[in-house]
Image 1 (cartoon, rainbow, N blue to C red):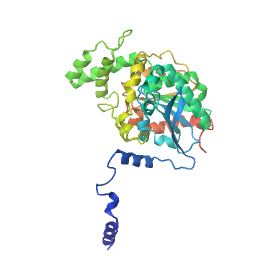
Image 2: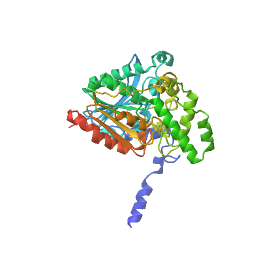
Image 3: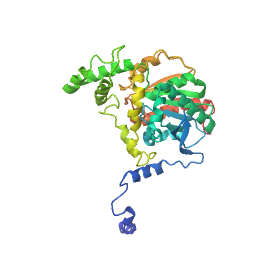
Length: 369
């Protein structure tokens, strides 16, 4: 009898609620609508904003999200240059919003900021000093707008370079600086990444990889420029052998961008238009970067590094970190990650942030009651 009643009730649910074309989502717009609603912040003290802020003379796109606006602010500096990470936020930093007010920012030449500005007008400003100035402006805006004395700053890859430089400039504005995929001595990183890829290719018996890698030897010699085509070839094989995402043959996290509700259907195909634009101006100075001598900081410094990162070599970062002097410091290995720690181990990333970083804000009285 119970089965009969259940069958009658199910039969009473109109199939038309699913439509005649099958269950949703049937397209990107419907899929992103589901994600948008699931992540919508409805808590009493929540904050959920997406807006442009005038930074460095241009409009730049920013999102500010958290279940409680009284929690400490975490500003994420994306990598690349030009690789906006807001498109990944619906997955990568969603859980962090319960403990921090998470701010994503499409830097000049990146993501939506690139799409809403004239590239020819922005081009003359594409230098690292301007980016560091931009950080100063956005941090000043967040401190003023959200009523904070200090924030947390998280720099990834390219963002770890400009973030670290900002930490030296304005330590009094930071609870702590956190680096992942931390850039230090880039040429040393390149040489080790190349050596890893060649060794992996030989062990795998991949004749094509060996031949292509040997064709650019010696790679990243001191004092000599590295051709962009050689860097691309090295990345082709170091990525293939798990140097960008551990255990994978490439960087697949960018696929999550296709489902980002922060970009319209019209914007989505162009999210990474700024990547090539930005690298044209910023990659050559970055490849010659050496921060080996920058080891003294007046704010806490933490590094979260993927054990298998060959894109920005984590062993080079670890060796640099041993020399760092700061009021407080910490280094955490993510054993199942390469360059994309937030994507590869999001749960452990969350726990580490809550256990090791949030107490700094708690001690300063900068958390929700």
